[in-house]
Length: 445
Image 1 (cartoon, rainbow, N blue to C red):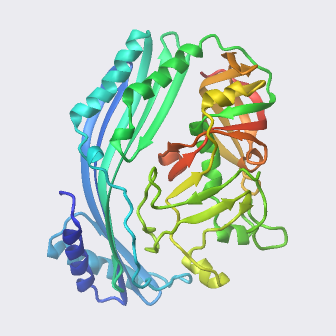
Image 2 (cartoon, rainbow, N blue to C red):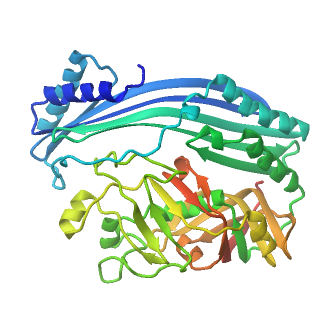
Image 3 (cartoon, one colour):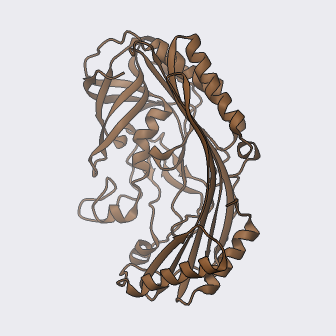
């Protein structure tokens, strides 16, 4: 089915709500057209285009809820889905945390759609892969990568008059380059809403340069080191902390933001004063839809951390009502302030340290301290007297992002990072951190 425009989506929502005999009705329509190309061993392996539109209807009789989904939009199918949701609701037990549907909201549109990204075609995708494969072959490297572009829309509506419709685009790219003998590896990731901000040649060159430099890695004794973390490496660690600013978890003693004896640590200084983080649906680099799809509440620009202090927590509607606080839409992005220095300048100011390209296979060790364990990979280097001296073998680390953000030396120029691993779009700087805890060596490249 083709992508729906606002008028078409509104008419469908009105028909669905009109069919409902329940106390309330909520409608969510998601549609996307996703193109991709994947390559490995210096050869394209798959390419494709997928289109899908799905409608989900949720109804309630009192505190009993039911949901049904479909991808057919004729009147008979729509009414059938509504009746199915109503049948489920009548059979469902009461939800003790149920709250009635919200009233009408004002949504200020954000710039999530870009025509250049929407115009990406098979030729564009083929060129992305070609740039990487050709450059890899010229350098006697083996490349693998994945490029994805998405054009889509989301529509929300309920029986209280809520309605929102917005189109969006984005693209993502990852590339790994390895030496033919497997002893050197480099990696890069890129994300953008606007195709004009993506350069396949530049991105591939980063992975290739790291692969060439990472050959003949030497072992460095595990221990605590000053580290320079590239944004992609930082995001995998810090992103897990940004996802933990939930008021209920904190109040119930289940997070690093829990206070001993009960309550949360809102307003407390937990980080270095350099740390400033906020969410902004209208940010020019990582715009997101101006509502939270699950609650249908409008999103706002919100300070999360201000000069090292916890500035706000995320309250669901239920928990806000219980705690007599104010609920707002869950954030769709996180933006962290940085400095003006490039990666090269951060390296140049380091007497002794470790440069980390990427962190991966990260797992939680202790939720209440946010202690994480993970591995470095795809380019780890020893820095001495302001220069990269030689590649080093990868490490396993045990570290908490809370500790990291208390051990900051410097922050570099922020960059856009996005993707499933961090769950939302981010703008995050490279950072130089003291006393990062490497616990053991890893033989993987």
